[in-house]
Image 1 (cartoon, rainbow, N blue to C red):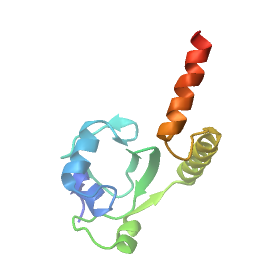
Image 2: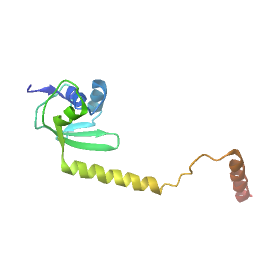
Image 3: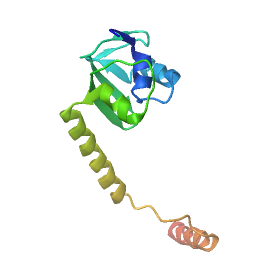
Length: 128
């Protein structure tokens, strides 16, 4: 196998659950090859560098093998290799998100009816 459509490969490598989700991600610019936007029908070959943004994470991967069939996770992970810089950057962003989440002081639950009345009374005192 020399060439595979990129949407099929992304689906086979388990980056997206369906080919249609892979196609939407490609069309919206979440998947790039060497900084260039792609079309879902573009053929890729081994050695191609891809940047894949999914959710908060952005992965930079090198295509090692080609496949049109979706297999188990251990087999699909052999299709690509993520760069060391990409792994470090994702870990740094994850720790930053964890720190920011800890800094947000959200109450553990919504106020009860009694607490809401107390809040309203307190705010009314400020206005008077």
